[in-house]
Amino acid sequence: MHNSLWATTTISYTGCAAQLFLLVFFLGTEFCLLTIMCYDRYVAICKPLHYGTLLGSRACAHMAAAAWATGFLNALLHTANTFSLPLCQGNALGQFFCEIPHVLKLSCSHSGYLREIGLIVVNVCLVFGCFTFIVFSYVQIFRAVLRIPSEQGRHKAFSTCLPHLAVVSLFVSTTAYAYLKPPSIFSPSLDLALSVLYSVVPPTLNPLIYSLRNQELRDA
Image 1 (cartoon, rainbow, N blue to C red):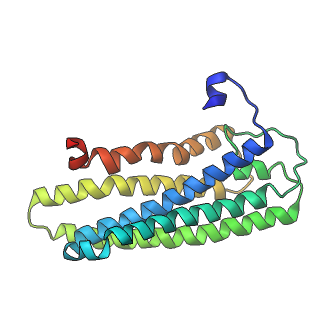
Image 2 (image 1 turned 120 degrees about the horizontal axis):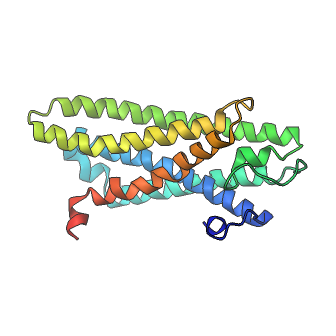
Image 3 (image 1 turned 90 degrees about the vertical axis):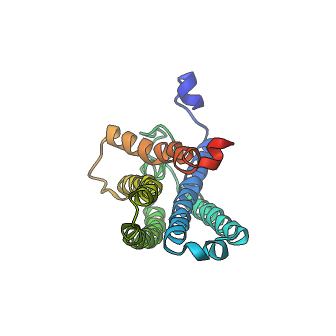
């Protein structure tokens, strides 16, 4: 934001490392929280009588702490590995912030690059596991919603679930493409658009999905 407002295109080495750490930290935590929100909707619609037991205040606190701890550990590993590499390909990033793929392009260490690829593969496996859980949960949710006799009840359930599902789909598809596309596919404008879609749009929509649509919060 500072660079955009003041029309500067420079960032310090430590600033770049901090920016990359915070980006990966919040991205990882965001996806963990999206998975938890899916579980919340599954319990609310498919097991409403057990909601207070399964999602009490202590359970919610534990899940939130696990999400933030997972995001922190993931960001720490990626940042430590990325900035342990010798950078010998100049100092110009083709992006509006410090992003792992663009920092790696400046590296001349093959082993470090392979380590980062290994970390990304582990992340992909974890994301795939969470995404599979989300898809399975929504299959159960839609089956339960379609059995609701009243049209108003079905509409309320769908209006609660579909925005969350849309954000998850946008977040996963754009992040996966940005980090897993082959190096031969290079387009600065495409990289810029994808980065905005996964780093700016989901957090912007979160207040609308989780807060402004909540009647109690609107009343307050």
